[in-house]
Length: 341
Ligand code: F6P
Image (cartoon, rainbow, N blue to C red; front, side, top):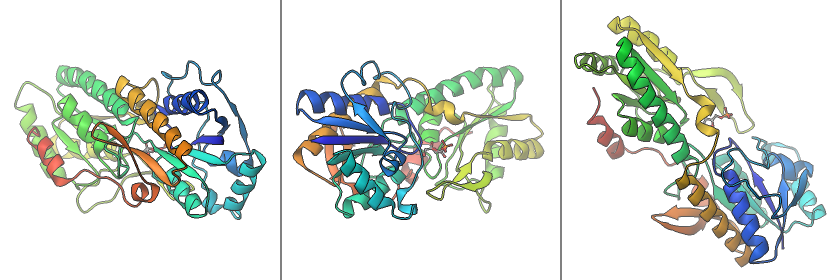
């Protein structure tokens, strides 16, 4: 078989580990050939691909980013996009696709599969909000980066007795904020699933100042003040209709200063959470996803996504993974609330 591989959406550490595993096992075990498509769905849409062999994937396991490039191109929004992909795959003699991505990329994969294409999906996102898998790779790396930032902020916050707010990624799901906040001993964690009361946050902050420690607040970029709205970076939208988030941390810092009289500053971690080398956990998960994805291709098990269940890698219908997001439930948030204040 000749198999196309692409990485779409926001990048994350571990993408290269998947590509390497797919190609290495696909060639060594099954004798397949590979075409790497550049920049997510743009590659198959515009016929931009190149041969991927063992040599091409050597040395990429620890590297962040993706050797294939990524984009948020949505072929379903392009007139005749699906037909163009079909034609280009035909021209490249590609008879199967491995699509590595989050809800948007895999949403397109689901639609293409329903259209009759032979697609297998691999879940990625630092947000860990894809349904049907316990974890996505990239998440552990992002959490560790955010945890280290929180550790560092604790010491400087204490020297100056300031409120330090850390804004982390997490558009609709607060997994990064929850895990990094728990691991880093944050005093308040704000997540999109649970609109926050600014007065309550201020009360936690005041109570923290009564100890010799200074408050650290972790806020997901999608966190919303009760009765308020998500803070947007600007009004623009990508091809999947997403707005750019960021700003809730700065907004909250101003509110906290006004209401408590204490100095409050915000650090936005932004894309630092997505760059650089993956943790061991993410390298292993990404590698195992890749190995199992090429098995699914070899078995002709189309329309499936590989997923982590406990410690096993299983196959689930692509549609099940993209139907709804996996968000933080009340019980998980309550675990963290014990440490607030
Ligand atoms: O979807 C993953 C994510 O990291 C979100 O948490 C965040 O809102 C978004 O990507 C940012 O993406 P971009 O690279 O377009 O700024």
